[in-house]
Image 1 (cartoon, rainbow, N blue to C red):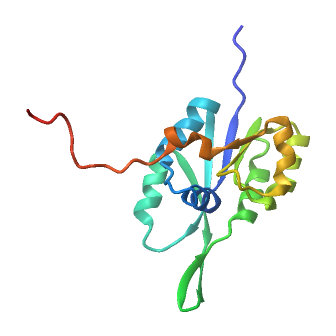
Image 2 (image 1 turned 90 degrees about the horizontal axis):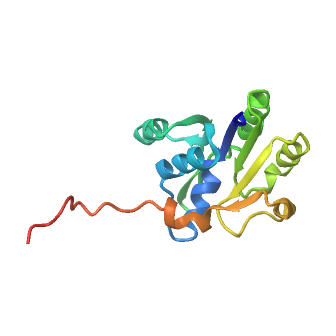
Image 3 (image 1 turned 30 degrees about the vertical axis):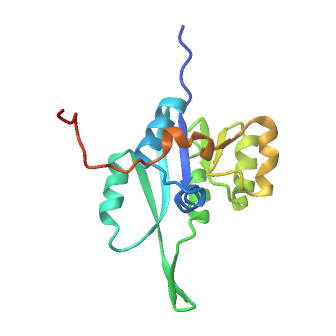
Length: 177
């Protein structure tokens, strides 16, 4: 008899993920990442928590076609030293949606290196619902380090070769001799 696959959901802090890999000098291919989650962990639903910025509608539609369920946070425009910074902290939304969905999944993957998720991760571990904590780089919160003892931490930067967004060269097919 074949063992039934657990239902796995992923909850992604898009800002933490995006800024984390970019700090290492590369760009994440969100389509490859969604396929990785599906193929490696059989993730049924991938919730992507993202600040809503007017003008990014094409990006949001593309992310939906990759299979992400987008959860938007209103953003604030903050000006510091005459530079605009857009702020859209998604922590509360990610925790709330994980708790709303908890009866619908067997295991959860949290994608963030932010220590603000410590209590959520501890709760999921206590309830035996934690699959992984995927952190963007080796520079993640010390509050999450204890979860590495049980091999729950997976560093996304170590998956760069398979998840990096490659720039298109514009050359297609074989060149003629």
